[in-house]
Amino acid sequence: MKANDMITLALSKGRIFDETLPLLKAAGIEVLEDPETSRKLILPTNHANVRVVLVRASDVPTYVQYGGADLGVTGLDTLIEHGGGYANGVVAAGLYQPLDLQIAKCRMSVAVRADFDYAAQVKQGARLKVATKYTAIARDFFASKGVHVDMVKLYGSMELAPLTGLADAIVDLVSTGNTLKANHLVEVERIMDISSRLVVNQAALKLKQAAIRRIIDAFEAALPAAR
Ligand code: PRP
Image (cartoon, rainbow, N blue to C red; front, side):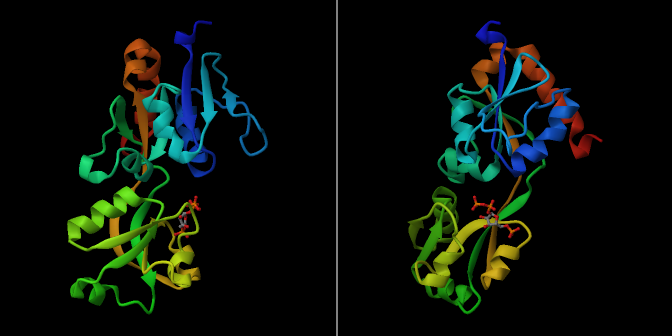
């Protein structure tokens, strides 16, 4: 088979993988191995010319932008961080974003300790220490409010930062709110709603148009709004 005939889809393990499976099924594509039990990073499907590659969630836009994958599914949060913040718009050269898949929905929020008076601090023009994995989104958000911040970059367990005095506030994803509650944090700002997006390599779309279009159309037809 010529490399040009192969369609490579980049997914990350967990919620995005699980919630993309029904969309793939609607496109007649079934992944033949379970990423939770297999150690393989390239998973075959029931179509000899379609494969799934498993990458870190934050690497999906990179794989698709530079052609390591033809298409991928990634959270809006990851996509905006990849593009350098929302002040730039949701753009990255060579990445076509045809669909909001309406899966893995959550929100990006600011949270603080329950005993921290965020509103008063903002009103006074205090400089806030903000811990987050999403530094571009956080920087743009606080800049748009005119709040000065010192950013502390973390890679996980953000909720710990206000509890240990590392930061006054965090910017993180909130879904049920249970993680915040369990750590005595409260949500004080909702920055944006998040869902997963389909991203497509623009050059691949030209070269393998028919096969990629078929997948985009099948995904689109399977979205809740289309049902
Ligand atoms: C996210 C986020 C919060 C949690 C929020 O972490 O960072 O910790 O989910 O969900 P909740 O509001 O339903 O409690 P995730 O589990 O995705 O892992 P992460 O550590 O990679 O961010």
